[in-house]
Image: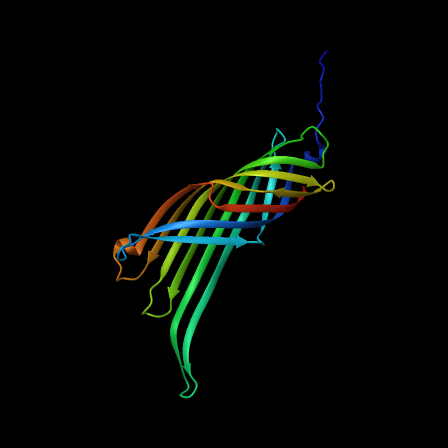
Length: 231
């Protein structure tokens, strides 16, 4: 005779997969060093701060055998083209001369994978804490094409990987609907940047510059709040 003992399980996390719509608010400071040769200096030090209040994303999660979750999120997807033209006009003699023209193309794509370790697995609770361990990869590019022969194009490519530890709290509103609040903490970041300038007066080393940077605990603060549906 065999005896089977069934352990209780929180029914709120007893689902195969779900879809989430997030808003990702983020403040980030980044630094970049560019080597050059101006008089008295040997590099440029660029500092950039970015604040995004509204940034919708979409994610899909699915449950593991141990009642934890895998999650994949499309964090960024953008392609845009800007056309800039500047004319010098003189109404008295009816002239309108093109003095500057430039086309700018920007591309951005980013994705995150996260393993979410759930708590309160065996108690029927609407509030369920968890912690996530995530890797987020991204690629960004910018290319300018001048419209005048006196100007020269330039391009920049950025790619990198960010590592996160993410405290989370999920509130299950109804049988198939839940809220997810989490605070991603970036613990490490690696970034590769390649810049190219088509100005022929510059030397080869100045026209194309590549840099590789790595940071621990970069200056970044994020809050993600989302609504999910069980499917």
